[in-house]
Image (cartoon, rainbow, N blue to C red; front, side, top):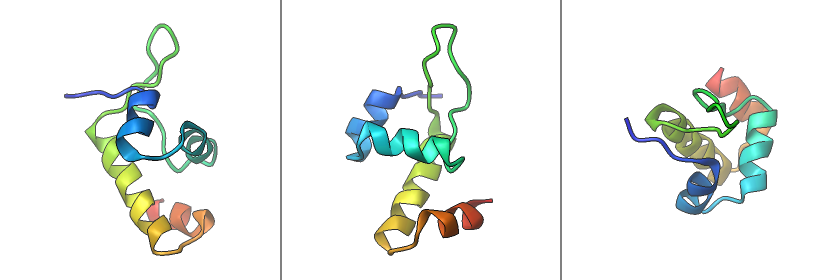
Length: 71
């Protein structure tokens, strides 16, 4: 399985690192694990979830509604 770091994920998705951390703080997107050094590796499952969040945001949905949809 391919993993991506938070920085790589931000660059690849075009989102700010702060936005990704905000999504994590809200419980919308969580990394699969934490490395021994505290890095957040992201796999395909987490990347697909981020794509879903991004699609909902583009449709104009607020984060609270997106959280309910993904729950």
